[in-house]
Image (cartoon, rainbow, N blue to C red; front, side, top):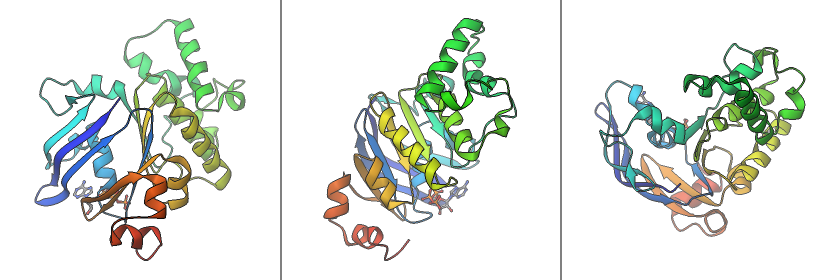
Length: 249
Ligand SMILES: Nc1ncnc2c1ncn2[C@@H]1O[C@H](COP(=O)(O)OP(=O)(O)OP(=O)(O)O)[C@@H](O)[C@H]1O
């Protein structure tokens, strides 16, 4: 699915957090959002599944389009939207339930009860998230007993189980060790064959490794958006150059 923002402004009360953002992200591609702390990356990411709706005083102007549909239109059902646009957070957040119950959670909410269907989707999602071999013999054990890296892959499996088209990832590897991080990065690379992925990251090397395109944000503005290779070798804006060479942020 294609993701676009047109003249998007976002506010937390009086604070203008996103300023006239225009961007079109390609389908089945990985887009990385980079920029110094507080520049609006997470705010922008969360507009794509309307996670900011829960925040008092938050409002947007302009459009966020998912395959040309404005997701802030009043006819859009947010629960339907979230089936299309899955999200993985910075800290793994499995529910205090079994591994199996975690993966099938979204399906059960949708009213799917048939055991064979749940088992099939659980296996498929856990395989896609590259964690099946590690958990297949303990599906009925608590998810909280898994390592941090395993929990994060389980959360990715949980997001995939509802068959989204878009996967939003907010610093999905920042709480993980290098080996788990490498696994998540490989996984992102695999998943882009099927999903449109947007990842927020503070790690320039990671953006370079996993993304096709990169968007650099600074103080609520989208400063530069380009192919990742181009952005990292010949940034157009001085602010991008300073950031990617580690001069600030
Ligand atoms: N719930 C909120 N209420 C008020 N202001 C907020 C809220 N969440 C974020 N902000 C402000 O909006 C701006 C953008 O925050 P955001 O979390 O999107 O930045 P970020 O680039 O993702 O930062 P980081 O890299 O540190 O996670 C910041 O100035 C922040 O203080």
